[in-house]
Image 1: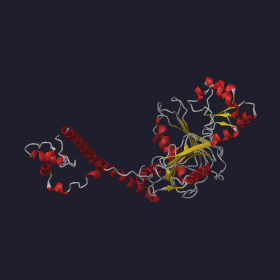
Image 2: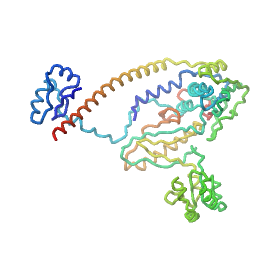
Image 3: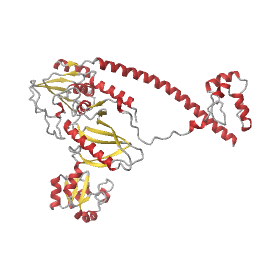
Image 4: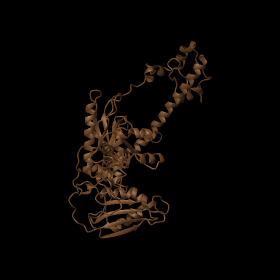
Length: 309
Length: 198
């Protein structure tokens, strides 16, 4: 296929390939590639009056980059379909039918109206009804000391010193988080467990607030807290398990949204942030925009919302 | 970010598929629980139960949210695949249970609220989900859910939009391919000219 003719000064096509074929059959011989000397005559010869009339006046405009948006898109919500909490949960429970009630989670997506390059919302929160409760926490403190006993009472999976060190070295112990009491820190440093715990991110250290004086409170706080952060203008977090009742989910949503509002107020002097939309979804279900109402739109459905899977 | 109209169209399609379709039945009030037990893999005739779980059971759950519907996928391939329906005498619903249900909700024990009087079973092995549904409807005398006029209208308009969208997509793909080809040739020619000018 012959290369299409182009004007070297403005680099726009004088012919489209389809017209070129038709023109080629009529033309006796192909024109040579234009050299800088015979640019002007070539233009006048090859371009028809029509093409001259519609020639692009400002060729640089086509290649000039579009200015990037500085805020995340927040579409107008007047045509959106929204649901009350109970209606949304009905669809989500149907989508999750038959799955174990602790494995499927409800998740909340809070869409913010915010600039792209500003501060982000990032915090931890203790939900009224925690979602993930089976966190195994290991505490390094003498098992029979008051701290050790308080830690076991607070729900730590493993408490101890020497035996714990040995078990970690032997890799017999499995846990998700590790805390250390300030008094046991020298023993921990001597035990040289950085090789084992360091790569897993479990080594207690002062910087990550895992070396504490009050272990019981730290265990409680760690077991219940969920972390959230804003990514691309949306804050997402798991807000409940499938087995939760509508009331529990509502309390969790309320706590979460209040917390986000407080965080946004805290950074409002640097970046303006507003809540734009709240969407409830689940592991296998669709995302349903919430309208802030709790009860069902079309009347009572009995006590189904009381938590039967 | 997907545009809002596009998102709403997809959502409405999905929600209508949950509300209507095969399996959209309202079960009588004397059913307490539906439990399915089948194998995690389809070998041995367990494809019908699995499809039933994904399609029909979803719609049944939407229209009968008070009935507890559970699955147990720990059977071996050679074990029977059984759907059991637990009946009870229809009693007026109890006062709503506001106390927390707790996160650990056992899914294989029957609900303690209403005593189960009888259990009927359906053998699901080597049967399609349509057959399983037919037998369930026969056994329970369930009432089908008909689409309302508004829902039919919505289904029609969504289908039209989908067809139109596919046609438009094909056309614009053609145009975009042509423009990309021209641009590519232009770049080539520009490269040739640069080589000549040097």
